[in-house]
Length: 631
Image (cartoon, rainbow, N blue to C red; front, top):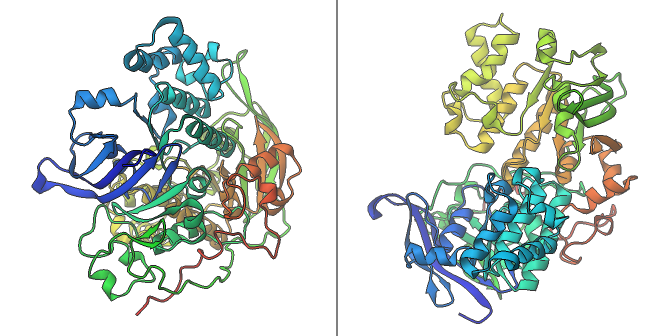
């Protein structure tokens, strides 16, 4: 192991089970190195083994996790075969893990100062004033304002972005050699994400820390990483320098992932990946065969090794560098043209507050807009801008302190329970987390048929079941799911069920609240494509809340930008992206991760917007995978 390498992982295999004979393999023969001052990005769909690999590499084995093979060397120490007391001395000092949800890394019952003091007391023996001074220094380094006061506060008193800065400060407190970052920016709005990424790059370079950055967001990894490894079915299928992998992807799976990335320029249509990944390691064949448009007979006969195609570019594919790339052909947009007509939804000077009288805080301040029949309007802004509160007010789930909302020319009662049956049928909401809206006691048939029972009681049971089966087919769910429960479905399948339930009564307005924020990129592409298709086919209007502006370009006709409850700008999506009139809108657009191999890694969007004749480098050949299989 060279002096620049902090952690070297070779032949890592991981499974779950109580005995060796019963182990279900989920990671197989993984190799990678983490170099000082460098970031290795690791990407792939949910369930591909990214987080399992990251945890196993630092010797963490929760529950029934087993590591039957492999080495993970930190200097001369193999983290996979040392006793737990020795590992605990390494964790928090030489090796630090930063979890996905910022709140999960912080104890709600302890002040920030107490939580920052603990690792330095344990690992460095630093106490008293010296410890306190180091806490202040770290919070200043990661950009937490007023650090002295911050040390006396509790985690819930900080935003998600500030919580993640504090997590990073704690992680750096003992000057670790290795930093494991597990989806550290998931759930953060685009500007907060950009600030965290910039901070990470700076502190990792300054401290010469080796880092593994796990994410399903490839454009983000392109900005933050020096090298990227793509995982599928528990194996690394491609690894290369970040710029090279994004501009010249060789494995069909990597190309498919890039095709699923929302394009902020609007020059590429979304393309989901058909099928689902296997739940673990596949023996005797390439695991991507069932989903690969380029597979040939030999792909089903053996699983290829990870081999160098070019210097520093490794690929696990028998056809790497030897299959015809699909031509670029424009996929017609499913967004219909909106004709001039009376608005379906009118929101006039709406105000919303949180808190009781006398101590209330305004969160939506005099918002006015309208939505035409068949139109999709995106509500965008940073966390805390009032997007979801405004959506819930339209749905009748949050009181409004002032203003009027009309639906098809008639007033919408502020409380959903006071609305007519027809209005409740015509206005449906899809929540961010399907687990919170799908009753675990009912199977899919019961969940999706319930609105029909409520709003169309005249339908017979057979008619209801026929309607359910038809809408499930429309959302690309197999009929086999009708008798499954929510706990038996994947995240993407649950969200499809939630969308099916919303559309089953043919509503005229759908309210969608961050419905793809927790989904990986391939499932997100399929869900967004599905929502646009159903909206176009049914002529349904959609109000779509998101903090991801790249998603907005894929699904919306117009966008409304909110900041602290105030409308900053509203207009056609193309106009907001290409010539934003408001400085805040420009800041949001500039923060969108959009990779270009010829530009600086974090170039402002104003310098990245393509002209009509300029293709987007790095993405121009990865969109359309609809080709015939090879012979």
